[in-house]
Amino acid sequence: MTDASAERDDSVNHVDAGALTALPKAELHLHIEGTLEPELILELAARNGIALPFPTLELLHEQYQFTDLQSFLDLYYANMAVLVTADDFTDMTRAYLRRAKECGVRHAEIMFDPQAHVARGVELATAVNGIAAALATSVADFGISTELIAAFLRDESEGSALEVLEELLAMKAPIIGIGLDSAEVGNPPSKFIRLYKRAAEAGLRLVAHAGEEGPPSYVEDALNLLGVERIDHGIRAVEDRILVKRLVREQTPLTVCPLSNVRLRAVDTLAAHPLPQMISAGLNVCVNSDDPAYFGGYVSANFEALAAEFGWDVATVELLAGNSIRSSFASVARKAELLAELAAWRAAQG
Ligand SMILES: Nc1ncnc2[nH]cnc12
Ligand SMILES: [Zn+2]
Image 1 (cartoon, rainbow, N blue to C red):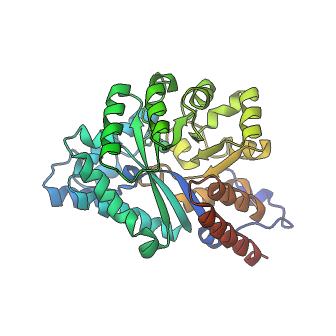
Image 2 (cartoon, rainbow, N blue to C red):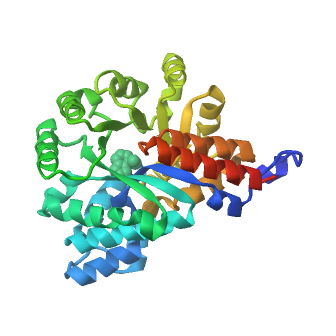
């Protein structure tokens, strides 16, 4: 990391860590299974009598060094073995909401991976009901409005995704939309045209991971072939000037996850992250934590690392928080409430 403070212009209104955690924000790119902290993994393993390959905190911590997306996914899926009962899913979700509250998150759109649980023999209803129980009281318990998104595994078949989607619809699962995640390269959006068509027919909102490790053409295809409203990551879009122009013109939300990108080596260092370039280009970007238990921090940690690295001022973090709120699937009234909170935060910064 470069020493951004050495280059700071004191006339610029920099933001301190306290202000960044108080900043009212929405988190739009968050995998609930990626919030399973090592301590909770061990606790749930003990509760469910599951023998883990890495049975101590020390051994588990040693596994958190990733070379790419797949090396992370291997551990992420293995650790899900501890999620057995609905209470396990509820506890995991509540633990996230507790931490999100400390980060100033006021609205969260939470992805879960239904196929990953069904494949382990966990009933779909167990996962859905467990997560939904925590979300049902998120406003009362944590002051956070929430939505749930079912993310489908792009390295599985479209048929498998369609089967699970039909089951979710039949059980009236409280999902607002669908997403697409897991191993990107070699699994283009074109594999999932029927899935997204079915979800759109069912009135669901559409998002997809694209341009994390995959090429800019995956971002374009997610828009053109799947009709997504929001792109998760999208950082490789910057490699295609014409695509950037389109994304700026259409103000397509890109849910960027900087610490994730560094830990999964999508970028070499935070200093080399394209986010400042994306902001300058006029792209509709926001900051998110992706899988915070694996990538060194929750959403405030992302803001803090970025603000330190790039010497951000109040106006920049306000823009990013505003983008997160405006790009959410929250109601018009809720967005207005959160934007008013953001304006109050701005006024308090002087
Ligand atoms: N960053 C990520 N990219 C793709 N799939 C994921 N599943 C959980 N985190 C992911
Ligand atoms: Zn993700």
